[in-house]
Image (tube, rainbow, N blue to C red):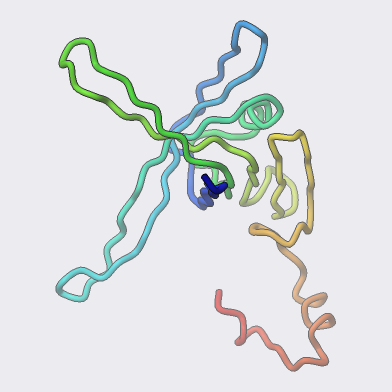
Length: 161
């Protein structure tokens, strides 16, 4: 069978404070709920938000970052893979399913207490990058933007956000 791709990319907010635990071998595991929102028009033309909830799990260094920096409401950019487990419920004899996102990369978004408004990325391989990584949550001064793109005629009106 050919190799497939299993990649989830999410941008949203943490639903409640993460649960942190350690395995018998000492590996740190962080679990938390995560909300993403999609805006759609209903039948009468009004915009409505639809929230989708996800279960996320982080391991090792990424779990340490979650423990130290993530709490309810934190905005994150997540890259990971989808994993579904199934089991037979002993009480009802029904097959049950639980789907989780295993985090490979985590980027903290939004402002930091008393700091600049930049994102920080953490990966399952222990990689850490801070500052202008070209991702979400990055900010630059307007003066540097004008200087960088001055010869291309791009103005603030050209930026979609």
